[in-house]
Image (cartoon, rainbow, N blue to C red; front, side, top):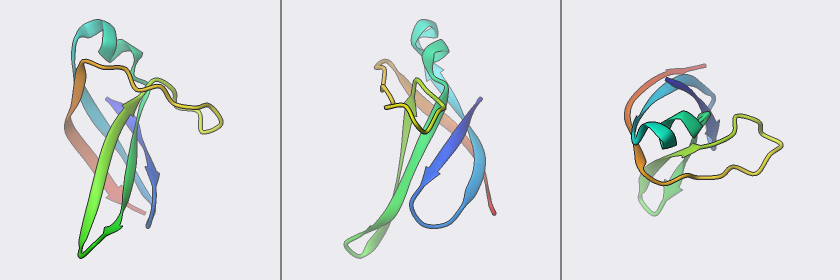
Length: 74
């Protein structure tokens, strides 16, 4: 489980489970959640990244996916 860093409307706290190749999964430090309104719907994107520091540019390694999300609205 890694923390979710939320970008967009609202504040959330949560965690995500990342699955895939063990070498790649060990590099994932957080999941960036980007949400907003695009057209008539609400979209949410979850992007695993290799850093949990907001000041660093995130790197998105290949070979994994998000399999579970636990999230609470603040």
